[in-house]
Length: 403
Ligand SMILES: [Zn+2]
Image (cartoon, rainbow, N blue to C red):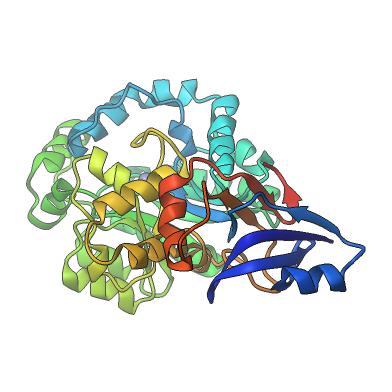
C-alpha cells in the first residue's frame, strides 16, 4: 500500500484540493491529505511536486503502431492521395517498423500519461510489443478485404491472429476485433467477423466515413476514392451500403473511428445503438477531412491520436491542444473538461475497463501533471493542464510507478 498526495485530484465531482489516494493495485480510499496521514501513519507517502494534479491514467483508444516508422514517406493534405501513398509505401513502412521503433512509440505515449491504448493491428507484427509494454492494451485484430474470393483465407488468418492473441491474454492484454472500413471490407466478410465478435463477447471497432470521397463512393459510386479503387483494385461497386454497414453492428456496441462525414440521421442511429466515436483531430486535419462537429454528437467520444501514418506524435497533450484549437465552438472551460473526460472516464467506458476514474475499487492507474504555477481557480485547471503540459511528471499503472 502507498499514499499519493497532490494539491489537486481529479474525480467525478471535480478537482479536490489537498487530497490523498491510498492504493495498491486498486484505489483503496480517497480522502483529504491530513486525515489520510493520521489514519495510515505507517504507510509510505509519495508527495507530488507543488501545483500537481493527479488524473486517472489517460486512454488513447485508437492508434496504429505498425506505421510507427513513418516520418516523411506519406503524403498529407488529401485523403485519397494519402491512401495511395500508404499502399505504395506499405511494405517498406512495415519492414522498417522494428520492435524498437514500436516500443519507442509506446514509451512516448507512456511519458505523456497514456496508461491504456487501443492498438489496431492489421498483421500482428505489433503483438509482442503490445504484450511486453507496461500499459493496458486492447489489441484490435483488424480485417481488411473487399474481394469476396479471398474471404476464406482472410478469415482463417484473422482467426489465427485471434488465437495467438488469446494465448497472450491477461489483465493488461485484451484481444479484440477491428473491421477496417465500409469501403474496404466486403459485406459477407464484415458480417462474419461482426458475428464472431458478438459470439466471443469481444470489443469491436471500425473506421467509418472518414473522408468526403469515402461518402461519395459509398453513396453515389463516384469520386476520387472510387476511381482509385476501380483502377487499383478492380472495384466495380462499393463493398457496402452505408446504412447496411452500420446496421451490422446493431447488437454490439462499436467504437467507430472518425465519422466526420456521417449525416445527422446516421449519428442519431449510432447514438441509439449505444455506439461511440473516436475523434482524431490532427489526423482529420492532415488528411484534408473536415471538423467533426462534436457539439452535435450525443454518442460518447474519445480523443485519440490515430497512428504515425497520419500524425507527427502520439503525445496525448499534442492531441488535446489540437482538439482545443480545432473545436473552436462553445465555452472553453466546458470544452476542456469534456476533452479530459474523453481520455479518461468516457474512454474507459467505451473500452469497458475498470479505470479512467479516481474512485475506490478502480485500477490504480495515474497520470500526474505539474502546472507551472498555482491556478487562479479550480475551473481553469482542465485548460491549464491541456495548454501547459508536455509530458506527465509521474505515471502509475496498477499501482506501479513507470515515469
Ligand atoms: Zn485509424
